Image 1 (spheres, rainbow, N blue to C red):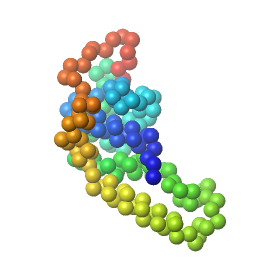
Image 2 (tube, one colour):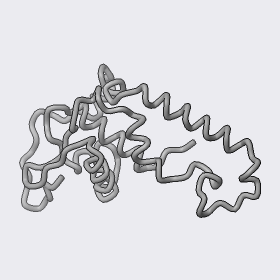
Image 3 (cartoon, one colour):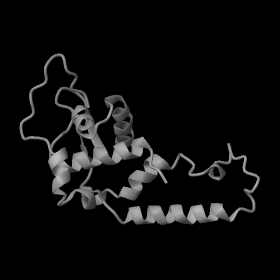
Length: 158
């Protein structure tokens, strides 16, 4: 199994916000810390906001922050948000499936059970479980207390 880049960025973004709880963070800060393109991150941030995981604010002092406490954000819910639209195997997509075994294959049933087990295990984990007490993670993702003022040359949008 392999998670998409968007799912990975979503989790990094949420962990960044959780580590920096209580303050508004900027896309640029997340992109730098998480080694990501701001354009790709913008799409992820948009989805996270639409699904209610984060709040965003536009403008000079804008940015994003968690919508609710990290202990109330389930990892399984985040993964489903970003992975559900993508079929795990060809036989899971009725529009593009060309497998002649579709009606008799037991492998699909095994895959379905394995996916459900995966998501069930992720449902037991919260964002807080990933960040609370994780000092090495905080060392990488925590912002310093002072943020340099924005210059006219640098965009400050969320």
